[in-house]
Picture (cartoon, rainbow, N blue to C red):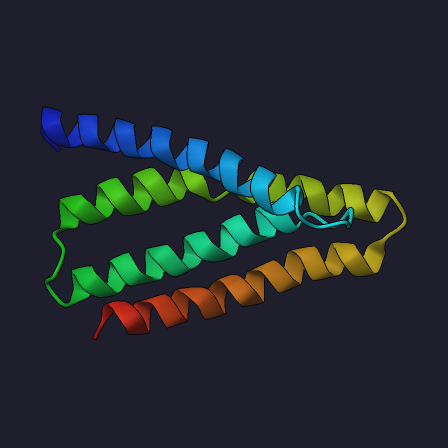
Length: 124
């Protein structure tokens, strides 16, 4: 990647991280549960967006550098596996194994479905 592409990547990473913080806080502030819905929504919506971007790239609507910037940069900083893992362990350690399982496996299944739906949408 050339210098402008690297700059775009850095900006996309910054925007992704800030957006994750805002979306997580917004969602979590609107649910009256201790389940980590904020990160769950972030990861599923990020999977959907990455699916759309990948579909657009596969059908020549978006270039490879754009996918790197938006997909790896924005989506990579927006989504978070480490927070999902930490929150899952916290739920299990707090004596809520069913919520831990829902967080881990529900996020995985919903994320894969969202990515598939985004891929289909991006392929149109």
